Image (cartoon, rainbow, N blue to C red; front, side):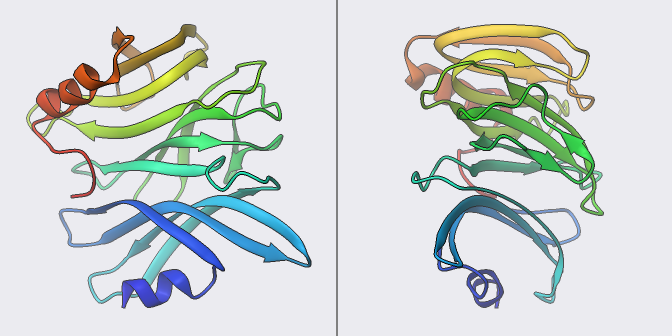
Length: 212
């Protein structure tokens, strides 16, 4: 089963989101805890399974931390070409997926969005570059099924570096970002109250929060 494959390699794990694409492949994403030679590793995972349940590929990233949720994939979405978009947060001084590294990485918690193609190869990473440590991250990502527009919800987004090099700042605010498939910013919606933005993400995409 998917659950059996998933939990085999982790001491403790939590699935935060799932998706089934247009070829009936399944995706699981979340956060995990491993005990490595007496040290604690907390990290994130993304796994893609064939309709038969066999593992096709996986992406993992870990950090040495006392906080279980410092490194986590919180939301995933898959487009019609089976590119995967993931949203979350990490805490490591060397955040890298395949041969792509996050920009100006420090040791504080950072928010990120990444695009991965159907073969499990990372295409780009967008991340915050905040010089101080507080809880921040991207909580979910959705794609409008009619227009293909990509929307990402986040909080306390300080100094976001986009793929075109631009740096945008939304300190202490909740925000929905509209981005294109190349990782460039198209539009923003901000608020001090997360509730209307959560509802706005649902309204903009026609999809409920969570997996599916």
